[in-house]
Image (cartoon, rainbow over all chains, first blue to last red; front, side, top):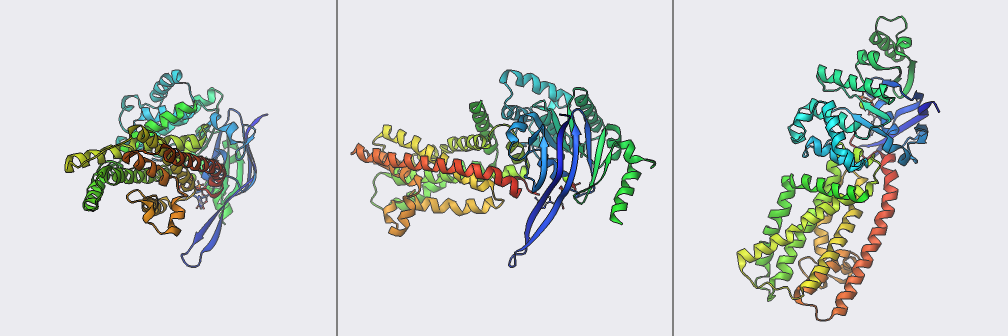
Length: 254
Length: 259
Ligand SMILES: Nc1ncnc2c1ncn2[C@@H]1O[C@H](COP(=O)(O)OP(=O)(O)OP(=O)(O)O)[C@@H](O)[C@H]1O
Ligand SMILES: [Mg+2]
């Protein structure tokens, strides 16, 4: 089995209701029949405009959301129905200031999640200290998270995502809010993960980052796939990946 | 391993709850104020032992308030802080985490009983007697179990909805009234009492009061305890069934997160 992630004709609709008196049903096709595959050891990019369906796709891949159609397999298992086979072996990082216990310290956050990932007690302290060093939070590890800056919370997110030494790491805009040094640190971590044979699927709006990191990528627009390939293939004869991306998006909007 | 998860969830939950001013208010100020309120109401009632309705009543109201606002509210707090999705996606089964949270909160909330006792003693120096301490201990354990199970049913349902705050406000006071926390259920109209006797806290409260007054006929105590445990088991089964449904449902309706 070469593909560690397999997505075929994947669909997800959201049903929302509007109005107070006349409850009007509206259906948003957030992901509308996309297919792609990721090989073990790849760094794979998921690109697209705001609202394109990137986060929705990642949520389906990380067992958080049920697809409304198509197949969505991670490590050979379906993410809805066979999620128990997957969860211990993956992890995910969502950008922004969410997803941490603000009234606990970084160390307590990590200790709690190592319990939830069933990491043996004996290993926990060593692993947590190592990861804290990796994201450069060791010095502030025992302060409450509510006293942290945005970027420090983001570093803690990254640390949490690494806690179970995942085979696949999903990252949704992981560099949002990081300073340049922090962003480089994250890129280094991602490259190191690749050297260790891990797979990374990430979304970002920073195309230079994509060019630097990704082995392959797909571009989605309004829930549909509009391009896929290596950064060089997508760039083709454009000057930069950004030029190529803008052309692609303008091409489908025209 | 589940035990480790349960214990660490309890610890995290207690730390977090206690850090919230609203929880501290429910835990500490509420039982004091309720004790004062109930004392003034019962002063001329002819009831001699203020333990049963004043201390126990105020303590139980506080306990239930804490449980309602924390167990239910925590789901929403975690939803808004983005951690609900994170804990949901770990290899640990979700009900174990929820259970850990609920037990943590309930254990901490027992403090309300102590606080209303101290309030009554310090402020009023009224006669307080506990006739059957051993029965009381047993009743208290059963009551804690009943409250834990009832909260897990509530928490389960609330995982589904983002309107959690509304619902938990809706259930707090009705349970206080229906289950006879501060007056005997017998004063309620017969049609309403049907609901009272379908709710497990009703029996828990009666057992506690019985042991405050003194258990003269142990058979009555054991019978009520049997009903309480039976109902609690029923609720536990219901909550297990609900959880199975909800585990899939939240991923279909996308209610683990806001937007
Ligand atoms: N829970 C939800 N309920 C209703 N609609 C939703 C929900 N979540 C997302 N959507 C809609 O689905 C579409 C895709 O959203 P998604 O978050 O996947 O986009 P994205 O590619 O991650 O965008 P961004 O770059 O802004 O993060 C959008 O139109 C969004 O409004
Ligand atoms: Mg997004």
